[in-house]
Length: 99
Length: 116
Image (cartoon, rainbow over all chains, first blue to last red; front, top):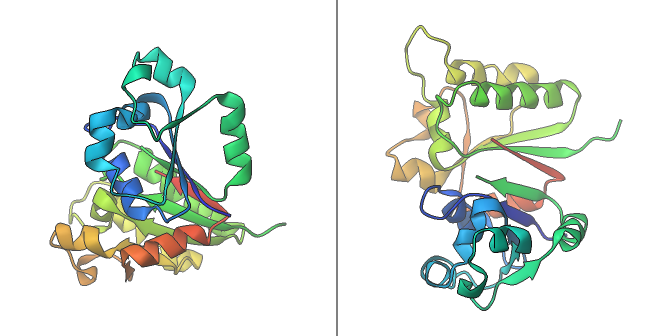
């Protein structure tokens, strides 16, 4: 099974995104939650993440909407709701949290 | 009891109050219950293995007890060590330095990864 990475911290105030990118393998999924959704804002994502091909990127829709950035996300971000979050957790192993 | 492969992932610098000790406690409990425990120090987490030489309670000194609990799979992130000018002989216990590829393989082989 592929690994699910959770990032819950904003990209410039924490090393979570950088460390996740370093440790993630091709085929893994990264789910952005809480302030981690700011990693998905288009310019940030393109600068830091777009070179890391082979990863699947998701963001929790409630956290995105709560921060008013829904229209600012990079196009490759898949928005997921709580049910899809549970499905991701059930279909990946291990789960790695970065903060 | 089912045995699981549990990786403790230490990614933060020490001196965050009780957090570093709580991670160590969880690790030792897992080891006592005969789980397949390993620990990886990555990013600023590698600083947790430096002996401060101070009299105050020091998480590095507690980590020194890991071999006593039969926790011998201790890994450090080679790149994180190099970026900080550290070598494995400066650490309080024997640790294997892992490349990026090694870290990816280690994580992929786990049932559970516990972050600090």
